[in-house]
Length: 332
Figure 1 (spheres, rainbow, N blue to C red):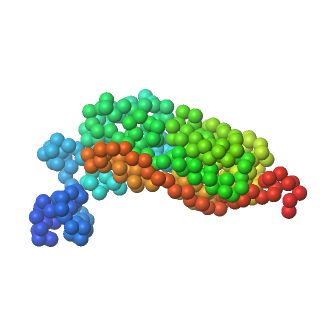
Figure 2 (cartoon, one colour):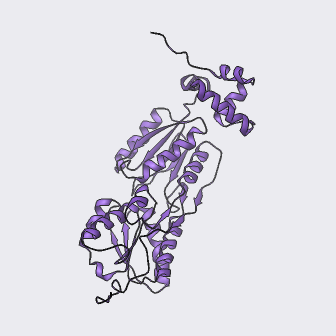
Figure 3 (cartoon, rainbow, N blue to C red):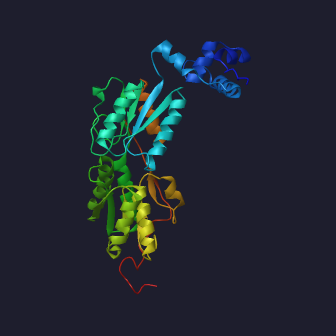
């Protein structure tokens, strides 16, 4: 059986009439290579099926060119989206990503960190498990934490508090004054910032929302949607899209309509938020910006933490309170 010989940087350079250093810089996103030439080099590399020899590079440089990414629970829909964003940013730098899953367990988180360092990763990007503290200075490789502005050692995060404020302002502008907040887990700093942002605006408008804490899952949202007395509220603001969607499915089974009987908002703008019926008003994080900054920090391209703005995405799950939802049972 014949084997296909892998293409080399030399072959790409010869085909395009440039130096091997130029090809190497273009493929790694380094050096002074014009965007047009870099695009041409990458296209030629793809045509030839070029794959970097990471093992050889590691022997030459003492680096694996691999970044470890640790997420709290890969089964929760937000974290695969984060992983994809990190992967895209890493590819632009010629880096590979090794993903670990803490499975919501602090002990597993500690194991995964040790395991990744033992495997020779050059740096770590960690989204901490709820209720845990990761101290970057205690590790032998650069570490970037992605969580909330209130998290010790945080390097990149969305402005969760301002996202909560945007949701609250939107609901108040629509005329809602009887608010239910699905606040998520009490030990989550991210959820706390989102809910505190909401409550800041509600309270300043003279509104005292009802807070309900739970896990941040579809199942938890469903339980709340089945058990709560919905006649007390005109709108529900959830700290996570998954909570909101579970809630929406449960209240629909009870005969309630969204937004006619109760308006509903989420947070994160997951794919589900766009396809659930009705589509969910929510807050969108700029995952690409957060991921890129975290990666820039561990590769030495950035040296400070940053908080990134969020956007309110208004869809069909919110509307002005109807006469029925405000308590007029005889409303047409």
